[in-house]
Image (cartoon, rainbow, N blue to C red):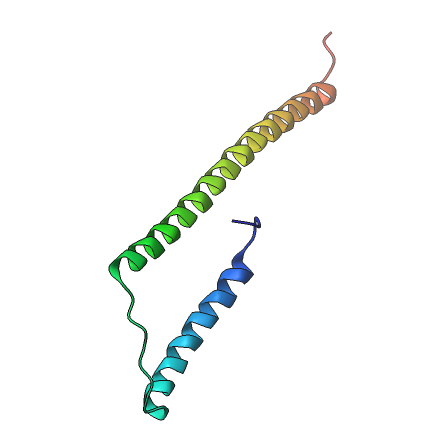
Length: 96
């Protein structure tokens, strides 16, 4: 994908697809010479492959981001534990 957060793009594209479905239905009713184009099996399979590759790419980048975030969480947890131990050590009574 081109952008890390492409939700807006997908929402616009979904709205266009749904709009085109309604427009095609209206064209069948109101335009007597309208005929929908026929799509071949090769074109359909290529389209599905494109969608699958895009989904794979998106899943792969999401998985990579999750790994990075997990590593950051582990480092932050270790830092928090170290700071808590240090604070406990400073608040404890000195040895006699």
